Amino acid sequence: NGQITKYIEKPWDWDKLRLILEYSADLYNSRREIKLKNAELFKTNQELNRFIYSASHDLRSPLLSILGIVQLAKHEGQGDNKYMDLIENSVYKLDNFVRNIIDYYQNSRSEAIIEVIDFKLLIEEIISLIKSNTANEHFEIQINQDVPFYSDPFRTRMVLSNIISNALKYKDPSRNQHNVKITVSVDKETCTVSISDNGIGISPDHLQDIFKMFYRAQKINKQQGSGLGLFIVKEIVDNLGGSINVQSQPSEGTVFDVTLPNCINEVAIAQAD
Image: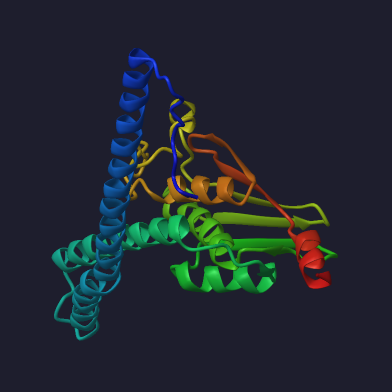
Protein backbone atom coordinates (compact mmCIF):
# COMPACT_ATOMS: atom_id res chain seq x y z
CA ASN A 1 0.00 0.00 0.00
CA GLY A 2 2.91 2.31 0.64
CA GLN A 3 4.37 1.58 -2.82
CA ILE A 4 7.56 0.20 -1.29
CA THR A 5 9.83 -1.36 -3.89
CA LYS A 6 12.60 -2.88 -1.80
CA TYR A 7 13.75 -3.19 1.78
CA ILE A 8 17.40 -2.37 2.42
CA GLU A 9 18.96 -4.38 5.22
CA LYS A 10 21.81 -3.04 7.31
CA PRO A 11 24.68 -3.24 6.96
CA TRP A 12 24.14 -2.79 3.26
CA ASP A 13 26.37 -3.65 0.38
CA TRP A 14 27.19 -0.59 -1.72
CA ASP A 15 27.04 -2.48 -5.04
CA LYS A 16 23.72 -4.03 -4.08
CA LEU A 17 22.41 -0.64 -2.93
CA ARG A 18 23.42 0.92 -6.26
CA LEU A 19 21.51 -1.79 -8.14
CA ILE A 20 18.45 -1.30 -5.94
CA LEU A 21 18.49 2.46 -6.51
CA GLU A 22 18.90 1.99 -10.28
CA TYR A 23 16.01 -0.49 -10.32
CA SER A 24 13.82 1.88 -8.29
CA ALA A 25 14.64 4.81 -10.56
CA ASP A 26 13.86 2.76 -13.67
CA LEU A 27 10.56 1.61 -12.14
CA TYR A 28 9.62 5.19 -11.24
CA ASN A 29 10.46 6.45 -14.74
CA SER A 30 8.56 3.58 -16.36
CA ARG A 31 5.46 4.32 -14.31
CA ARG A 32 5.70 8.01 -15.13
CA GLU A 33 6.09 7.22 -18.83
CA ILE A 34 3.07 4.89 -18.76
CA LYS A 35 1.04 7.62 -17.09
CA LEU A 36 2.05 10.11 -19.82
CA LYS A 37 1.30 7.57 -22.56
CA ASN A 38 -2.12 6.88 -21.07
CA ALA A 39 -2.84 10.61 -21.05
CA GLU A 40 -1.77 10.87 -24.70
CA LEU A 41 -3.87 7.81 -25.57
CA PHE A 42 -6.91 9.34 -23.90
CA LYS A 43 -6.39 12.55 -25.87
CA THR A 44 -6.00 10.57 -29.12
CA ASN A 45 -9.20 8.66 -28.40
CA GLN A 46 -11.07 11.89 -27.79
CA GLU A 47 -9.78 13.30 -31.08
CA LEU A 48 -10.76 10.09 -32.87
CA ASN A 49 -14.26 10.33 -31.41
CA ARG A 50 -14.57 13.86 -32.73
CA PHE A 51 -13.27 12.78 -36.15
CA ILE A 52 -15.79 9.96 -36.44
CA TYR A 53 -18.58 12.32 -35.40
CA SER A 54 -17.40 14.71 -38.10
CA ALA A 55 -17.21 11.90 -40.66
CA SER A 56 -20.71 10.74 -39.87
CA HIS A 57 -22.27 14.20 -39.92
CA ASP A 58 -20.14 16.99 -41.38
CA LEU A 59 -18.80 14.87 -44.26
CA ARG A 60 -21.88 12.82 -45.14
CA SER A 61 -24.32 15.75 -45.05
CA PRO A 62 -22.85 17.65 -48.03
CA LEU A 63 -22.40 14.38 -49.94
CA LEU A 64 -26.06 13.53 -49.52
CA SER A 65 -27.00 17.09 -50.50
CA ILE A 66 -24.98 16.81 -53.73
CA LEU A 67 -26.58 13.45 -54.44
CA GLY A 68 -30.05 14.88 -53.87
CA ILE A 69 -29.40 17.80 -56.22
CA VAL A 70 -28.08 15.48 -58.95
CA GLN A 71 -31.09 13.19 -58.65
CA LEU A 72 -33.45 16.16 -58.71
CA ALA A 73 -31.77 17.54 -61.83
CA LYS A 74 -32.04 14.16 -63.54
CA HIS A 75 -35.69 13.87 -62.54
CA GLU A 76 -36.47 17.28 -64.05
CA GLY A 77 -34.64 16.37 -67.25
CA GLN A 78 -31.86 18.90 -66.68
CA GLY A 79 -29.18 16.39 -65.83
CA ASP A 80 -29.76 13.66 -68.38
CA ASN A 81 -26.16 13.29 -69.47
CA LYS A 82 -23.11 11.18 -68.72
CA TYR A 83 -21.53 13.88 -66.53
CA MET A 84 -24.40 13.74 -64.04
CA ASP A 85 -24.03 9.97 -63.93
CA LEU A 86 -20.31 10.32 -63.22
CA ILE A 87 -20.98 12.80 -60.42
CA GLU A 88 -23.63 10.53 -58.93
CA ASN A 89 -21.37 7.47 -59.03
CA SER A 90 -18.49 9.37 -57.46
CA VAL A 91 -20.68 10.62 -54.63
CA TYR A 92 -21.95 7.10 -53.99
CA LYS A 93 -18.37 5.80 -53.82
CA LEU A 94 -17.23 8.52 -51.44
CA ASP A 95 -20.28 8.12 -49.22
CA ASN A 96 -19.70 4.37 -49.12
CA PHE A 97 -16.09 4.94 -48.07
CA VAL A 98 -17.17 7.30 -45.26
CA ARG A 99 -19.76 4.79 -44.06
CA ASN A 100 -17.13 2.04 -44.05
CA ILE A 101 -14.89 4.17 -41.85
CA ILE A 102 -17.78 4.72 -39.45
CA ASP A 103 -18.61 1.00 -39.44
CA TYR A 104 -15.00 0.10 -38.68
CA TYR A 105 -14.88 2.57 -35.80
CA GLN A 106 -18.19 1.38 -34.34
CA ASN A 107 -17.13 -2.25 -34.57
CA SER A 108 -13.84 -1.59 -32.79
CA ARG A 109 -15.30 0.68 -30.09
CA SER A 110 -18.88 -0.29 -29.28
CA GLU A 111 -19.55 -3.14 -26.87
CA ALA A 112 -21.45 -6.19 -28.05
CA ILE A 113 -25.16 -6.25 -27.28
CA ILE A 114 -26.63 -9.75 -27.38
CA GLU A 115 -30.23 -9.94 -28.61
CA VAL A 116 -32.40 -12.39 -30.51
CA ILE A 117 -32.08 -12.00 -34.29
CA ASP A 118 -34.88 -12.57 -36.80
CA PHE A 119 -32.94 -13.47 -39.95
CA LYS A 120 -35.96 -13.28 -42.23
CA LEU A 121 -36.70 -9.71 -41.19
CA LEU A 122 -33.03 -8.71 -41.11
CA ILE A 123 -32.25 -10.00 -44.62
CA GLU A 124 -35.41 -8.47 -46.10
CA GLU A 125 -34.46 -5.08 -44.63
CA ILE A 126 -30.92 -5.30 -46.01
CA ILE A 127 -32.12 -6.24 -49.50
CA SER A 128 -34.72 -3.46 -49.55
CA LEU A 129 -32.02 -0.90 -48.76
CA ILE A 130 -29.37 -2.01 -51.26
CA LYS A 131 -31.36 -3.54 -54.12
CA SER A 132 -31.07 -1.49 -57.30
CA ASN A 133 -34.61 -2.39 -58.43
CA THR A 134 -33.50 -3.73 -61.79
CA ALA A 135 -35.52 -6.52 -63.35
CA ASN A 136 -32.57 -8.89 -63.73
CA GLU A 137 -31.90 -9.27 -59.97
CA HIS A 138 -33.29 -12.44 -58.42
CA PHE A 139 -33.01 -13.37 -54.75
CA GLU A 140 -33.56 -16.83 -53.31
CA ILE A 141 -33.79 -16.88 -49.52
CA GLN A 142 -33.94 -20.06 -47.47
CA ILE A 143 -33.99 -19.94 -43.67
CA ASN A 144 -33.85 -23.09 -41.54
CA GLN A 145 -34.33 -22.01 -37.95
CA ASP A 146 -36.07 -24.02 -35.23
CA VAL A 147 -34.37 -22.33 -32.28
CA PRO A 148 -33.77 -18.63 -31.52
CA PHE A 149 -30.41 -17.18 -32.46
CA TYR A 150 -28.72 -14.73 -30.10
CA SER A 151 -25.86 -12.46 -31.17
CA ASP A 152 -25.02 -8.80 -31.76
CA PRO A 153 -27.67 -7.47 -34.23
CA PHE A 154 -25.60 -4.44 -35.25
CA ARG A 155 -22.50 -6.45 -36.15
CA THR A 156 -24.48 -9.28 -37.74
CA ARG A 157 -26.24 -6.72 -39.93
CA MET A 158 -22.89 -5.23 -41.01
CA VAL A 159 -21.53 -8.66 -42.00
CA LEU A 160 -24.57 -9.63 -44.08
CA SER A 161 -25.01 -6.16 -45.57
CA ASN A 162 -21.42 -5.99 -46.83
CA ILE A 163 -21.48 -9.44 -48.42
CA ILE A 164 -24.93 -9.03 -50.01
CA SER A 165 -23.97 -5.57 -51.25
CA ASN A 166 -20.87 -7.02 -52.93
CA ALA A 167 -22.98 -9.77 -54.50
CA LEU A 168 -25.05 -7.05 -56.20
CA LYS A 169 -22.15 -4.72 -56.95
CA TYR A 170 -20.08 -7.23 -58.87
CA LYS A 171 -22.62 -8.55 -61.37
CA ASP A 172 -21.63 -10.25 -64.58
CA PRO A 173 -22.81 -7.87 -67.36
CA SER A 174 -22.90 -10.76 -69.84
CA ARG A 175 -25.69 -12.54 -67.94
CA ASN A 176 -29.37 -11.82 -68.48
CA GLN A 177 -30.21 -12.55 -64.83
CA HIS A 178 -28.16 -11.99 -61.71
CA ASN A 179 -28.93 -14.57 -59.01
CA VAL A 180 -28.17 -14.24 -55.31
CA LYS A 181 -28.93 -17.16 -53.02
CA ILE A 182 -28.95 -16.72 -49.24
CA THR A 183 -29.21 -19.78 -46.99
CA VAL A 184 -29.37 -19.57 -43.19
CA SER A 185 -29.19 -22.60 -40.89
CA VAL A 186 -29.49 -22.16 -37.12
CA ASP A 187 -29.11 -24.63 -34.27
CA LYS A 188 -28.37 -24.31 -30.55
CA GLU A 189 -24.63 -24.02 -31.15
CA THR A 190 -24.08 -22.03 -34.33
CA CYS A 191 -25.58 -20.19 -37.25
CA THR A 192 -24.28 -20.77 -40.76
CA VAL A 193 -25.01 -18.24 -43.50
CA SER A 194 -24.15 -19.00 -47.12
CA ILE A 195 -24.37 -16.20 -49.70
CA SER A 196 -23.70 -17.18 -53.32
CA ASP A 197 -24.01 -15.32 -56.61
CA ASN A 198 -23.34 -15.82 -60.31
CA GLY A 199 -21.36 -12.61 -60.67
CA ILE A 200 -17.97 -11.88 -62.14
CA GLY A 201 -16.15 -13.85 -59.44
CA ILE A 202 -12.69 -13.37 -57.97
CA SER A 203 -9.41 -14.67 -59.32
CA PRO A 204 -7.81 -17.40 -57.15
CA ASP A 205 -4.70 -15.20 -56.96
CA HIS A 206 -6.68 -12.61 -54.96
CA LEU A 207 -8.71 -14.84 -52.62
CA GLN A 208 -6.09 -14.93 -49.86
CA ASP A 209 -5.85 -11.12 -49.80
CA ILE A 210 -9.47 -9.92 -50.05
CA PHE A 211 -9.81 -9.56 -46.25
CA LYS A 212 -6.82 -7.22 -45.97
CA MET A 213 -7.36 -3.53 -45.24
CA PHE A 214 -7.59 -1.35 -48.38
CA TYR A 215 -7.00 -4.35 -50.65
CA ARG A 216 -8.77 -4.05 -54.00
CA ALA A 217 -8.80 -7.01 -56.33
CA GLN A 218 -8.89 -6.30 -60.05
CA LYS A 219 -12.46 -6.73 -61.17
CA ILE A 220 -13.61 -7.78 -64.62
CA ASN A 221 -16.11 -4.94 -64.84
CA LYS A 222 -13.62 -2.53 -63.23
CA GLN A 223 -15.83 -2.01 -60.20
CA GLN A 224 -13.81 -1.05 -57.18
CA GLY A 225 -14.86 -0.72 -53.57
CA SER A 226 -13.23 1.10 -50.69
CA GLY A 227 -11.07 -1.87 -49.72
CA LEU A 228 -12.60 -1.77 -46.23
CA GLY A 229 -15.83 -3.75 -46.54
CA LEU A 230 -14.48 -7.31 -46.37
CA PHE A 231 -11.78 -6.27 -43.91
CA ILE A 232 -14.52 -5.05 -41.56
CA VAL A 233 -16.48 -8.27 -42.15
CA LYS A 234 -13.47 -10.39 -41.15
CA GLU A 235 -12.83 -8.23 -38.07
CA ILE A 236 -16.44 -8.57 -36.92
CA VAL A 237 -16.59 -12.31 -37.50
CA ASP A 238 -13.35 -12.80 -35.55
CA ASN A 239 -14.62 -10.59 -32.71
CA LEU A 240 -17.82 -12.63 -32.51
CA GLY A 241 -15.82 -15.87 -32.36
CA GLY A 242 -16.93 -17.08 -35.79
CA SER A 243 -15.31 -18.00 -39.09
CA ILE A 244 -15.65 -16.99 -42.73
CA ASN A 245 -14.66 -18.80 -45.92
CA VAL A 246 -14.89 -17.83 -49.57
CA GLN A 247 -14.86 -19.82 -52.81
CA SER A 248 -14.85 -18.14 -56.19
CA GLN A 249 -13.99 -18.53 -59.84
CA PRO A 250 -13.86 -15.76 -62.47
CA SER A 251 -17.06 -15.58 -64.57
CA GLU A 252 -18.72 -18.25 -62.41
CA GLY A 253 -19.55 -16.50 -59.17
CA THR A 254 -18.66 -16.33 -55.49
CA VAL A 255 -19.78 -18.14 -52.33
CA PHE A 256 -19.25 -16.75 -48.82
CA ASP A 257 -19.84 -19.07 -45.86
CA VAL A 258 -20.10 -17.38 -42.46
CA THR A 259 -20.41 -19.29 -39.18
CA LEU A 260 -21.30 -17.46 -35.96
CA PRO A 261 -21.75 -18.91 -32.46
CA ASN A 262 -25.24 -18.92 -30.96
CA CYS A 263 -25.12 -17.12 -27.60
CA ILE A 264 -28.42 -18.64 -26.45
CA ASN A 265 -26.73 -20.48 -23.57
CA GLU A 266 -25.03 -17.30 -22.34
CA VAL A 267 -28.38 -15.50 -22.37
CA ALA A 268 -30.01 -18.33 -20.42
CA ILE A 269 -27.26 -18.21 -17.76
CA ALA A 270 -27.52 -14.42 -17.50
CA GLN A 271 -31.29 -14.60 -17.08
CA ALA A 272 -30.94 -17.28 -14.41
CA ASP A 273 -28.51 -15.11 -12.44
